[in-house]
Length: 201
Image (tube, rainbow, N blue to C red):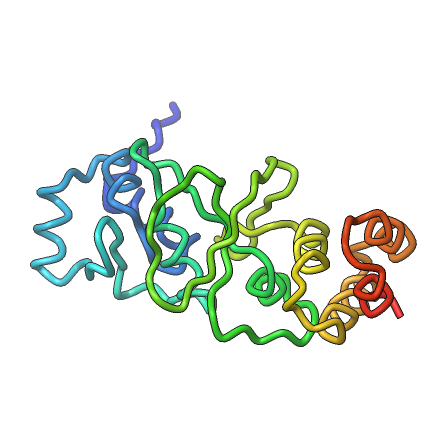
């Protein structure tokens, strides 16, 4: 006779979610898994959790992600329903995808035009409507796809052309983008011809 699998405790369920997020857990996620505010307060007081910021906690026994700062910026940014509203983008997305040579000193993320949330220092906020096809998950980080990232950076007059070309070379070499199609798409963008030439030379 088969015995049913034992149901995971709220703590076990929360740890599974946090493992995918570099040890981080939002209060909304915890609540959905059975840990209410009083549980979070208790475990924070007992040292089982560390409060990172409002609505965001960390399991100290779990190894932080190499993108911990990006995860903290995006996981803490939710609307009233608890839906994540920020997506890592632009130069920061290149870091997540590990292409190119860009090492941004600030976190770049994209939110919808109507979002009025304030982000802390060191965060550059871009406003655009992202389709589901424009986003992906990588190492627990919600990030723009490589193709969307390159389109965003092509439109960013402040992003250095040499770093853009380096990112294209990496992405092409690893089979992430089709160089010919990407070149056609960039040529079709409404950006100055001098920048198109600099990006694609």
